Image (cartoon, rainbow, N blue to C red; front, side, top):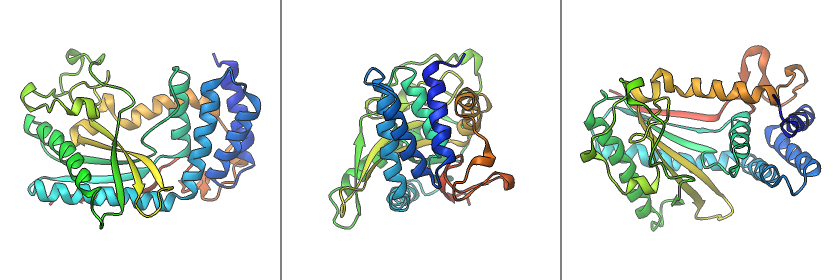
Length: 302
């Protein structure tokens, strides 16, 4: 059953969507409508409005923020190539789509949490190696080596960013994961785990999500050294191809399940949408509404 507040959010969203020409414009308009229709008693919903407005300003500068993320991506790619010359892997980066952002923030506020997210931009490192203890060990090593490298680069006059490790929004120390239900999921042996990483990021390799999702997530605040107003949280996710493609935990499947929940609230008539770059009749969307922006991939698989 749709709650009254959720239904109102859906109505306000459609009003903003049908009158907007870009996703930043949509988010600004939606944010203002939320502020006008909810009271201080709805603190988390007002926080949603505030963060959507902030996201709109970030999206107006998306090119600059993706250049910042690209600097992180290139550093990670080259660092892995240097430290693990025989490793097969790829790196991908993306700017989260507007609906995906909205749904994730709504998931959080209706679960009683802050709507803040730290993966508006994200880098994923995927290892194309057999699923072994040695591969899991390499995942941990890559996460740690990245933290050490960015601490070093923060003091460099050449590197364009400060890349500051951010405290995770939750500590992952247990999960509802049942190994008996997922015999294909490989858990790390105690001797390869780097204990301090449990406090510095989210260790879903050691503590998989209930459907078997595994990866190590670390969050960073990226700050331009030449313009401190350009700052954004970004996430680095280290995983393996087996973990990423594991069907019960597949990311696309997870998003489909979440989308079904919120699609009922934020459904819209595609014929009334006039966002630049949104062409559903051709199955194309470069507006940033339903698909990620600026997805890039770089692979070392030979």
